[in-house]
Image 1 (spheres, rainbow over the protein chains, first blue to last red):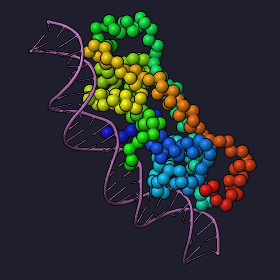
Image 2: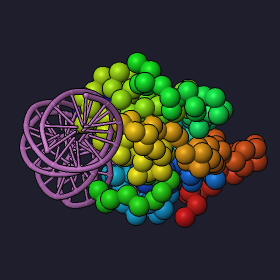
Image 3: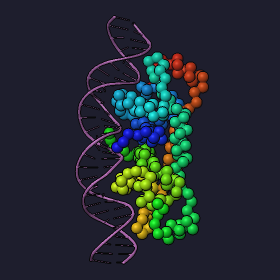
Image 4: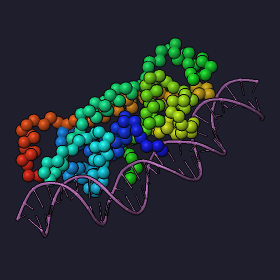
Length: 112
Length: 112
DNA sequence: GACATTCATTGATACTTGTCAATATCCATT
DNA sequence: AATGGATATTGACAAGTATCAATGAATGTC
């Protein structure tokens, strides 16, 4: 298992966790959320929330801003753009007209 | 670490791997790909490809169809729809007009 | 300064996952 | 049925990760 460097994979990996997806969804709804408010929605201890926020920060999903005692988190618009770009690129694929299908069936072997 | 059941998280987790993302991208480009053609693009052994294809199958990303000796894979349109739906739901969040920002700054504590 | 609160870090532990060698299974051809 | 090629499965191992208790660092209040 080699460590990830592809930024797209990093973005997906960061979102692919129930706690972090819940965080992203709450941020999508509220726009800005204090770190102390995430413990309520996610049913995990404070260090765990802090860990997940770090993952989201380092993957580019969120930014934080200190205001006195509290730290407010919000989603980076750039991450949303990148995520939607990936969603646009992944598609069911090129159309397969009958001629192409027939060619594939009669071909001696798949393309190398 | 409790096992995942949320289908959205499962979909993201399945895509959040370099090999599997490469598979999805090749399927997006070519529409339909023979299992034997994935070993070339991903630089991993055949059992590893088979393992990743299984993950993509069980998470709903792809379907397979046997044609004689070869098995052809393609992306499920439904998975694409779900993925794009998630991409649409995650956003930088509600707008923060000056009044809201001022209220947040002067508030004694974050909303509980 | 002393104290309380918020958030981050450290360290330990249990669980999950990506990988491959070896083997099995399925299909087509001879 | 015997052989060969394409995929899947099994088993084992190394590496990654989610979690929390304990602790540290920063800020605000008294």
